[in-house]
Image (cartoon, rainbow, N blue to C red; front, side):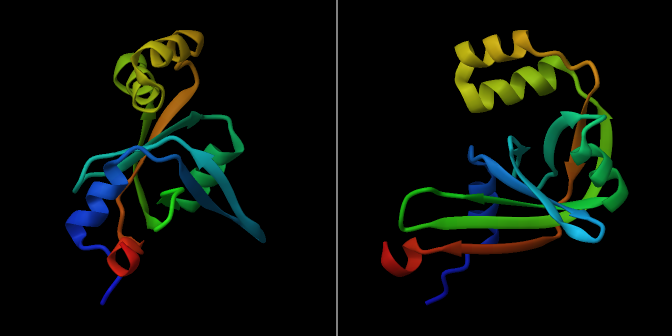
Length: 143
């Protein structure tokens, strides 16, 4: 029995709310690997928000691509790892990007407080189209 997810399963899992782990090539060093909020709709691009002057943004610009892994924290474990090219970079919008992302991760009340305490000044949205997928769903073996 295969423990790989189907195309539909992997897209649905990635669209669920998980804190992602982003990895970005960093020249002669190991990749920069950090937790990050992200959003994704099945069949579309995955997107993140970051400060345009951050090391992350500079490495993303240089690499032109990144990897992201989302996983469950409870057994039987599941994960989806995606890698692909950056498809766009644009200034972040307060309502459509910052507040929406804050609502996704913190709910309406805390999300509004977070958004109001932060600015989109200097923030950018970076989108990536998943080209390579790796998946595991141990529920298929042990669930």
